[in-house]
Image (cartoon, rainbow, N blue to C red; front, top):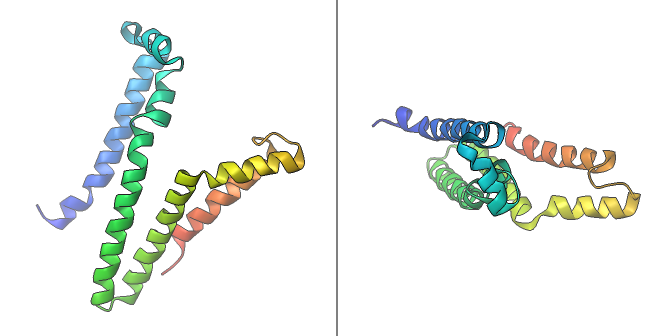
Length: 150
């Protein structure tokens, strides 16, 4: 298998996961196929969508996948450094820095802590205008790190 075919595997995997997830959520939560939604709600007290995306498997796989990305980016950056490719090196270092920030945010719930502080300071719900503007700004900064020219 050549490298061009291998580079498409992560994209194909993600598209397949999202498609399967959409189909399962549609069948279970929307159409209640074979009464599965009733069983899930009886057992877990919340719909399959919540279970699938926020508990298992997506939430469980998120940290190891982010860690694997960080290690992969560091490895590629090391190869670029060894070969003297400064532009490639800076690209992978910036991408790795963004993923490290994503892992720190997810593991430490930094965004939730700051949003709760905003709620206490302003008296507004953490999902109100100020909290929403903060979250939008927070993720915009993460996206900008990923989009910075190398």
